[in-house]
Length: 99
Image (cartoon, rainbow, N blue to C red; front, side):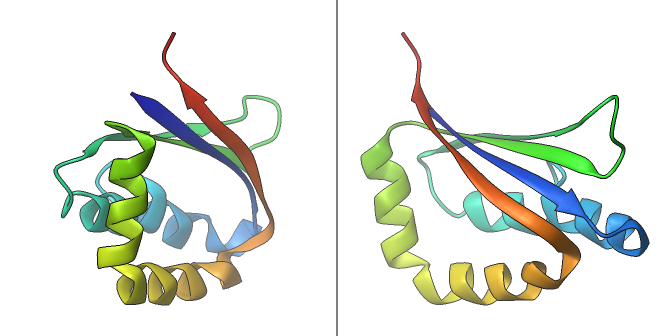
């Protein structure tokens, strides 16, 4: 299993909309659920900075995630573009495997 981790700084007036997209039942998770390789989507908020979040998306393996991105590329890109306006910063932390 792999986990893909991203960090976000959210605009204060866009937090509710951000949560609608990035929560474990949000639009990203709904899109990911179209793949059998998707396992979970977790959203975490920094206890010291209420506008800083991390997403942790679990996938069966890297090839399953890559196949998902190929099959659903247009939906993935469209959702990513919609969500860009919600954050002041977005950073890919990395892809981590279970050991």
